[in-house]
Amino acid sequence: MNVKPFGPGVPLVIDASAWNRQRLPDIRERWLATNDADLFASCSVAALEILTVARSEREFADTDAAFSALPQVPITASACRAALGAARELGGSRRLPVPDYLIAAAAAERGFGVLHADRHFDLLAAVLPFESVRLPGS
Image (tube, rainbow, N blue to C red; front, top):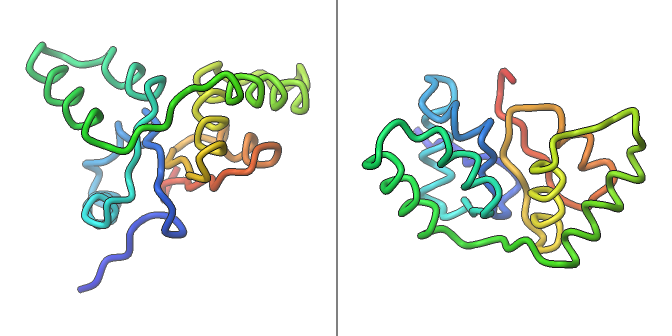
């Protein structure tokens, strides 16, 4: 059976919300297909979120190595300006986690998407030019 990767074929920054669901039965096959297609990317902010919950030094080292091997999406000064602009455009009534603004802005700057399982990135995709790819069932 030919399993399709997540998204439209652009690299996807892995958000912590997606990382934490990768082993779920309805996610696993497409996760592996996306990995096999070399469509995953890392952003230091997302990697830090994921690494902070490592349960051991071994898990930290393994996860850090996996994220370091992926294409990197840097948090540049222009990505920070875009994140601030997105916050202004969304207005104070839609305060989102700071890491999500930065991840989305950095992905947008590179023409990448974000693989996630929360509504924050859907809101950010309305004001930043990146592909918001939500995991099924989230």
